[in-house]
Amino acid sequence: VIGAAIPGWNVPNGDLDYLGPFWSPSSGVHAIDLHGIRVGAIEQTFATSIGSRYSVLFDLGASGHTMTTELTANELRSPEFSHSGPAHPQVSYGLDKRWEFVATAASTTLRFNSTTTVGGVANGPHIDNVRVFAMGPVVDASLEIFGAGCAGSAGTPVLSHSTLPVPGTAFSIQVDTI
Image (cartoon, rainbow, N blue to C red):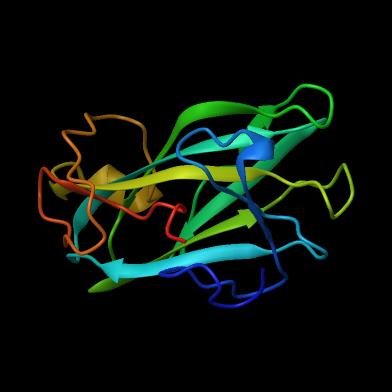
């Protein structure tokens, strides 16, 4: 898949595989493999409130090797996430991987980048069940310095593509849109 073939998502570089039921997604019937013919990335831009904290949860799948990925939110970069999978072609998922960031602009582009260097370009990390929660304004200035954290509750999600994030709610940027 190249470009805007998945509604709401952009493929800014490389390409990816839009996986169906054969690869056992963690949620729904599709997942994203960040390695198509070339190593790729996928991103989505959404409205944010400057100085507010957001929590990103996602499932990271692997098949045959340890798969790694990192996220960016505008200029902020997450630590590397990893998950080891069973022998190819089986897939397993590390559920609810979590990264928090503080918004620095009125809109944020959330990007998933593969950092996997084993297994060749045709077998990369699988991304599924992406959720973003608006957590409200930052109370602890140390979060702003690091741009990432793991503390706090995710709250109750409101899963809707059209819902804008407001404190205490969430919106979904699911991959099952086709």
